Image 1 (tube, rainbow, N blue to C red):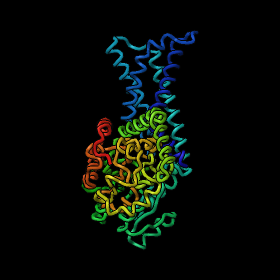
Image 2 (image 1 turned 135 degrees about the vertical axis):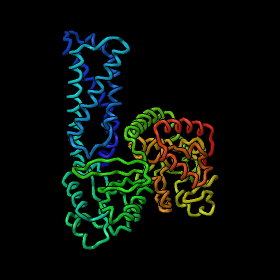
Image 3 (image 1 turned 180 degrees about the vertical axis):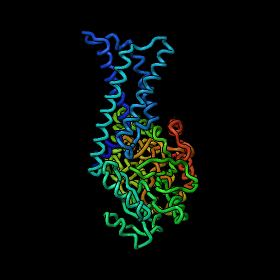
Image 4 (image 1 turned 30 degrees about the horizontal axis):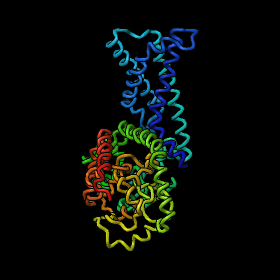
Length: 480
């Protein structure tokens, strides 16, 4: 199951590369059919290369505008094919205009028409194949999103019917909340678990993995209840979807979509710029792949040897090369974060005896001169080399290069409600906290920087943070 989840996480990035391959195939077919040649390599292949490059660049923009690089699990196949048609036509026209404007030459008509037709056909076949494969995965129980329904009525009944009859949408109903005991059978007959009254929403969000909350209550009768639920979800960054007319809310972004014939308004207090999120994941995957290829022989292997040598000559430091620890990620998902071991192997057991020396405020444990740190550990912690194995977590999609630091489950249990919004995005190896003082920051300042990052996030900002992180690490500022 984990391999399939990793595949699903990398699928979005692969779409852009696969689309380019489809366009290359269409380009080659158009060249050889419009200008038949017995040569193995057609001269027109190079002559029209500029048009091909511009078309690919324009396609990326057009496809992003049509939301072809994001998950569209709620859209019908017809809607997606129409989006492909719009993107192909706009790419053909715009790239033709650019070539004509700068070269004063118009592409051959036969080539132009064949290229457009092949691009549309090949791209459509490819996307249909991908969509059918995803539908099959979701029907088997993979790549799904956990949803919570608030309210038991005709609207929620219709919602449950659609979700359960359309496994390809990839939704799993975690349960529903309802105060009125007489309404419970409405959804219980569909084998949907009743998780408690409306007042249990805070407990459910704190203790269960919930990706989306659907509110089916009527606004006229439950205005204040809906408002309270929406603000609770907003506080922790969980997406809210409603099936009724809404009241004004201070929400970062909102959008309207259709689930079959149900109009859905989504209120999301975390970044929802899908194309930029695609670019972020692409950057994470490419950068982590390149970094691992370069760093494994140059840094990982020497560091592992030093840790093992220290273990050999100083028995108290014996232990594995890597240290894994359960951390909390996106929307409460738990994963094992990997680091080079910089402490003695029984560091967690010794922590209880050192609680009185904790120098950090809030639910964080930090000691500047921690006696549990080994000799090699002091060096790799000062240079942040101990953090580099987290590139594996980035590669598989559990973490990002930039984002809030992944907290321990014990720390999350002590969070205030507004602090839990740190879990509404993927955790990162570095972030605003890293370039603003690192271990010198108070917990409140740390959280404020994380929330500021979430509210102002952009790919450009990620690039700036990565560059500044390198400068901070080289200078060794604030490392503990």
